[in-house]
Amino acid sequence: MRTTILIAGLLIGLAILPHFLKYHQQDFLIFLTINILVVVSYRLVTLTGEWSLIHAVMMGVGAYTSALLSKNFDISFWITLPLAGVAAGTMAALLSYPLFRMTQFYFLIGSFATGEAIRLCWIQFIKPFGGTGGISAIPSPELLDIDFLEPIPYFYLVLIIVTVCVFLLYRIEKSRIGLTLHAVHWKAVLAESVGINTWNYRALAFVIGSLFVGIAGALKVHYIGTVAPKQFDIGFMVFILIWVIVGGYRTFYGAMLGAVALSVLDETLRGVDQLRPAIYGFTLILFILYLSGGLEQLPQKLRRIFWVGKQGNV
Image (cartoon, rainbow, N blue to C red; front, side):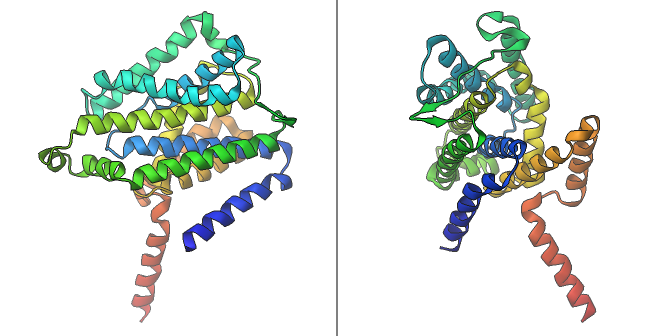
């Protein structure tokens, strides 16, 4: 009950917040909300213990699918949005067989190489992908007389879709499938001994995670109006990894904390772009050394420090 009230309060606060922000801050809020869907969908993939480097490219698959269908075939955003997820999920299903023949470090490298191959296809094939310049003039959504070019209406659209997607991902994690994914990670041999096909569950997590990040990709490009290979390069993938590590990956909300904290940090560093990678790297090292469990374990750690301090004083 307390959790429900907390979530309801958070959503009401988010619904009011954009009216007190400046134009560029409203933009930031939209991207932050999309980033939450990106990082939560990536967390589902990591539940099986496999960390991939292709998640950003899967977001691009959804983004390009929605952009091409909207621009070349004049298909409504409301149809291209789910199709973007389906395309990314289908691509993940096709890649599952070669990728999940590898595990751990080899899977990491294999996923990076596959993602780069897809990204290079977007660069090499000017038709239909537009090469390095990508695709521009992607239409924004249309519904009744609402102007989705304005940040506030688009933020509400993103907030509703991301809330539904995050809720679905939460339910998946708490379902029998989610519990099995945990078992595949922590007790793979035991899970296989009771008849669980670990390959199938790793592939399933990869497909579902890709489906949701494909939707995130479509949401992003229909707001900014352009899509280009640069948006989904290894640099963005590293950001996703750091969000998860800094936030923590043992609880559902940990990765979201990381995305929010680092996205806010990123926004405050706009004037010092050249220092941004160094600051990110320094932050990552600090967390690995002193808070390896991420922000989700900060309250527990502080409680322990103060409790021990109190005991020492006594």
